[in-house]
Image 1 (tube, rainbow, N blue to C red):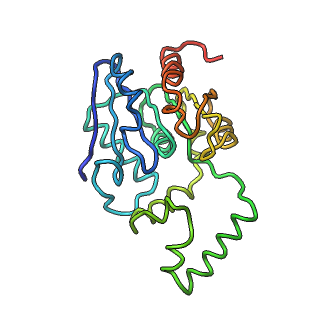
Image 2 (cartoon, rainbow, N blue to C red):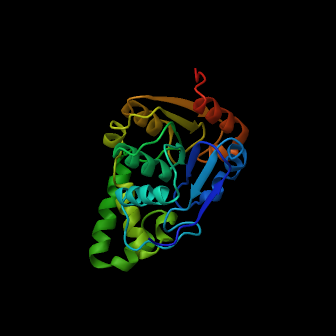
Amino acid sequence: MSEVSFLQKGKGKDLVFLHGYLSSKESFAYQIGYFSRFYRVTAVDFLGFGKSGKLPSAYSVDDYAKWLEETLRLLQVKNPHIIAHSFGCRVAVKLLSQGYEADKVLLTGPAGVILKRGLSYRLKVRIYRFVKRFAPKFAERNFGSAEYRGLSPVMKESYKKIVNEDLRACARRVRNDVLIVEGDGDKTTPLKEAQAYLAAFPSAKLKMLAGGHFAFVDSPLAFNVIAEEFFYGRSMD
């Protein structure tokens, strides 16, 4: 297995943190510091991010889920609560849909839903494909988000696999209690995507929080209280 950067802190029931794309375990600094007083916290850097090793090939969400399952096994994590952000939600949903044993799952700014795309998006895709046929290097440098253009070739291929998979079918197979915490100003994974996810899970609730895509950083105290209430089984109404 490639080199994995991880953090384990505290004692008690296992609690796992899964970070977003181009982020790292340190994004959960406020939560790790708080919850490590009550749980054994495990936070990992996915391959290709943070201080973990590079991807050996273009990973799909399924590849990341298999990698995570093996990593958590080696770290002796059992039946954990999970807090995941954005891309980390994709991996969590895929992993849980395959029968991984976990307890409660909190998804914040969850990615993994592909809604109907507008005319302007479809037009950009057609232009990109046309240009790529005649000038592939120019197309790679000038099309797509800044996030995409800054990736290595292997990471670009992985990114394509990741963002083009709709995980609602996987969400329908998740039997865990799920809480979606959505920032009221999240423009990266907006409310309509969170609502689509909500409708797919057999057992899920939605809670709004002040903030953007990193609402757990924007409003850390409020986020921690919401998570604590959820994990301890208190009413979320």
